[in-house]
Length: 251
Ligand code: DER
Image (cartoon, rainbow, N blue to C red):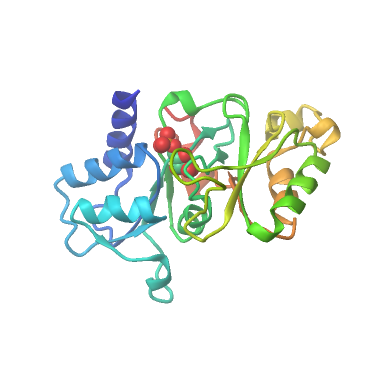
């Protein structure tokens, strides 16, 4: 698996990293480590390039690689990132992504949306026809005070058994994000794609079955939700997974 992550990351950098890049978004997780490694090994001069991290782990990755990290809120007005790289937990046929396995989805989304081009780097294990096929739940960043109410609302939307993500090892109790928020993990049946809808399937939430964007918007509208770990509507010129230039499937 590590070899396929490294191969996907190397291909992403070789095929998409602009040699004159001045501003680059760097995501979170394990695959992104190989993206930074590939940037360093590419021989590109990065002394004047600013790298915008998507959380504490991402910032550590950038600075320990000897690259210049600039926090999102320090980006000068009007600056658009040349490109942003990140990983994903699952990718569907429309190149929508489930993100948030690493609990950084909020900063990952604002960095992705600040970039001209968003490159999602993932090995083929992540590619499924529909989201929530192999990855079971949608990560959602939630204000702690509202968490119980959000859980109730998610159950009303058809999620069976949404939970507040707990710390693993060490500190007891709920995990806190870089924003000091909770992560709620909400399982749903697989999310319908545009092909499903065009084939007449019903993505309006009956029996908890939703179309991707519809559910993302429903969840985002729940008071107390900061951001939802569904990256959608990024296909086409805005976003390309490795090998997905022009809408082909990621390799
Ligand atoms: O949290 C995220 O969305 C991260 O990008 C992460 O889940 C990606 O997964 P990886 O560790 O398999 O690259």
